[in-house]
Image 1 (spheres, helix red, strand yellow):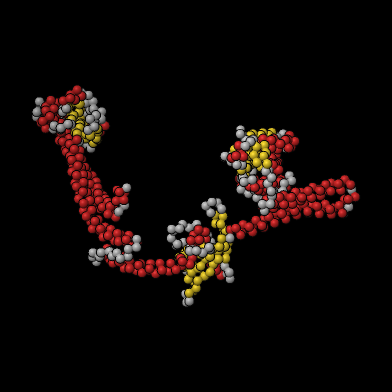
Image 2: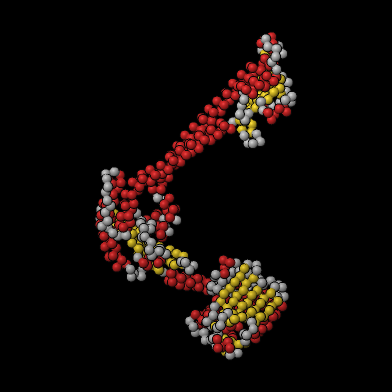
Length: 611
């Protein structure tokens, strides 16, 4: 980590840049120099071989020309003499010279190990080209020892007649060794130059970064509140000017912070203990003051700087805020989701701050928590609407059938009986609704008295199963009752819990297909709680409806639930009964898989043991 921090410093960056510049420059020079040197050495080596080839081709004419005696007057020139000439005058280290006749057969070779090649044909391309009279024939090869060699072939001509060819193979090892030595020298020089450059870079970087480090140290001290710090001014260059500017800034900052702290203390004293949230913004809409309650309501961290944009903080546009400020009593309601998945409802009121001659210079925003008030109002509205709707439907039906009877249907006995039956059903439905509402009212007001007595769990669940056996048999629904070992009797209001179980089993039968299964189970849910669950394999409940399934008058499928005779209050009543017993009720469901409703009943440890 220490090295990582070092490489992030300006000093390291200056050194690295300086070294990289030199390295790149040296590399460019080196690449150019090595390329030129290689081309020069290769060209020189090739020219030398071509010169030797041309010279040897000229000498070989008189050895290969059958009429050489007429030209030279010498009748004793033989191939052996040519071999001696090659050996004495044209010896090439780690290379070979061959003289070939017009058919490409080797007449002589300078390499002792290749004497067996004499009389054989050399079939290389450069030889074929030379025997065709072409003079520029070059090639390169790498032998079995990984040594690069140069190959040239020159025609031996008498006038326009090709008498044979000279074939030369020369090793380029010495040339490449020379290049490698030069490269090593260049690399050594580069490394030495880089070392010196790095040393000079360290010195140069230190001279630049040392004053900056000093200013940084003083800036850190100023940030911690030590406003008596002064950065040393070491010259009149840019760094010296930076030191002077820093000292001036420190003084101005000290004065500004003193005034700011004084004003902030005054405001903080007034705002800290307010029950409403208060924010103040400047003319750009930036929050400059925010009390603790406002931070809690807007979920702003306690230590976070109060430099928020009010439009982003409240989630409204600037146009909307300007329009609100133009109203006589500007206010709005807004909802904020809390971390615990609950919702906070706030009334936001705006008031502009005016300064003479400058117009609007800011805004005061007051936040009032009206969550409970709005929830109660919403619940009241929903309850009144639901009750009105639930009562209006049967009353409308009754009215329409009464009017039909009054209009003459009473004279037709069969039709009249059917209409009276509908009126009776709708009346009973209203009675059930009013009864459920009265029951809920008693539970809400804690007026419902629990008559607890020892009750056998197994007997209670078996009786529930028997009560609904006829309905289950009609739909061919199977049922099971499972009781965990050790559960016998507990203290509860049997009538009330029977009502809960009847509601749950009735719902399970309604929404379970023919041939499916309903399970009633009782088990221990801790040392002082008994859990009872009703599980079916029916149509299930969509995930979006699970959170509201216990709300009063809430139905997943309103038309189907109403046609089955439900009031939408059964689960609400069941939950209130369970709460009265000190328990809780939970529902788990998956669409087209099934539903499981579980409720717990509080029972003291000694009550469980005294069975």
